[in-house]
Length: 470
Image 1 (cartoon, one colour):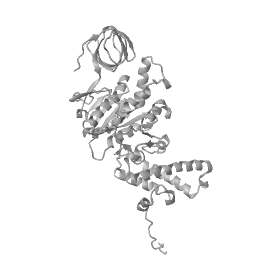
Image 2 (image 1 turned 45 degrees about the vertical axis):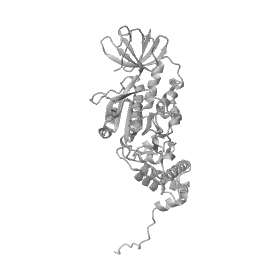
Image 3 (image 1 turned 135 degrees about the horizontal axis):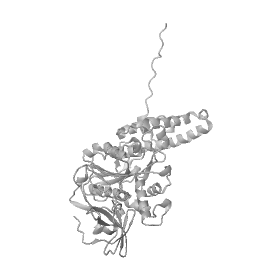
Image 4 (image 1 turned 135 degrees about the vertical axis):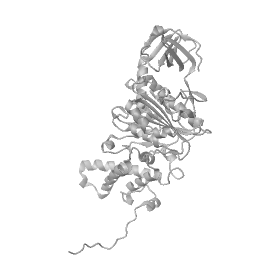
């Protein structure tokens, strides 16, 4: 237990989730705090700011019900630490790391600071191996690579939570030690039940850590949840030697919590009232993923965020795009046409994909097929716009093949059940069948040897069939 030496009673002000304490000495930024009420109940918080003898403390549980004249504040002298280790695997906790699965508190042989630090660029190992999600559209077209940060951009009403749960439930690293840390922020109770049910099998296998912050939990807790998740993941990866996938949803709820705390502190707002340090705050989370030279394991991050009004220029997706290595964008149009997952292949990109695919990693035809399929879909979109303008009858036979490819992509390649884990070979075979809707002359990005191996054989003409005479 942490030793608390001095308790302060000089609570000057309660301001939203913040407590302003006066008369303090020797208090540091980000210091962990214990708040004791007049009836002996305990709450916890972190120091946000220190100015002379004043300290601003953010309270995890909120300040409702606190009496400034009867509240005692004790400072721990160090940042918030949590026990780390394999004891987290198979556990379900709230956003503060307290068990909600009926089990005992999580224990570990060592403790780590929740704040963490980004990986030193000099010690970063370049990502080169894939993480297969079992979702064909992601594995073929926007392959996730170990140590990568690849966000999912969604809009209200799209199945981003379903996709996040599916990725967390199905992902693997080619038989190597693997684990998933799922951090949910601002979830409804129905969403929480859905997440727990969808990930029950992985949790029972001892491969999952579940941290769930619900919409009615204190807003401050949302700022702590992703940091807890990354602290747990870092130890599982770089000490225990596991490849860890961290799924964080919804980062927009996290940013809104940050905005609320910033407003309570009276800070000057920036774009759309978000604090001016939103970029650096998001970077302090995302840059904790990667691989460290000479250390085992890896941390891969898939943050999920909802773009308000579908606006990709909104500050949260805009700044996230600057920090991360690509994006998976969900399409309302594909969703309206009945496709799940409704991935927009032309708006999606994995900048590290080239490092993680090809011979010795996935398949030797993978990079060629992915590039050709994206190029063909781009041309198909142009042809569809032309057909809307001039009519389908004005299109050439070659153009009509592109429209057929677009339909085949949607209904034969993209569509996948929510509980279906599609192997890479099956997803690649579907991609080949979609591409072969085109003629050989339209597949100029694929080597001839690969085309010869995958083209459909033309059946030999059989005897002419005659109808029997009456």
